[in-house]
Length: 151
Image (cartoon, rainbow, N blue to C red):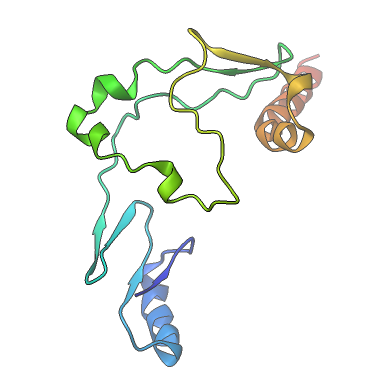
C-alpha cells in the first residue's frame, strides 16, 4: 500500500493528488491525513482506520519556560500501570526484537524522579535549547515590546 503522509489535506486538492499518484502507482493508496490515521498490517492484510484520540491526554506537555533558568517537565499524574490493563502490558514486545542491533536506545519506562523533572538550561544541548525555547524567546520578545509601548 502507498500512503501520503505529512501533507496538506484539502478536499479540493485530494482528487488531483489521487490523479497524480495514479500516474505512477496502481496499487492500494490511502491518505495518511488528517492526523490520527492508523494503519494495521499483517503479512496478508492491510487496513486503515481513524485512530481514537482522547479529548484530554493523560499528561500535559512540558512547559518550555526558561525564565527561571531551567526546563521543567511536569510529573505525570498517573502511571501506565494504573491506566492500562495488565493483559495489555503482558503483550508488550521485547524492544530487542524490533530495534536494530546497532541501535538500542536507553528506554525510559518509568518516571525517573518523584516529582517534576527540573533541568538547568545550561545542561541542555544547544540544539535542544534552540528548538524548545523558540516560543519562550518569542514570548519574551513580545513582552519586552509591550513593556516599551506602555512606558
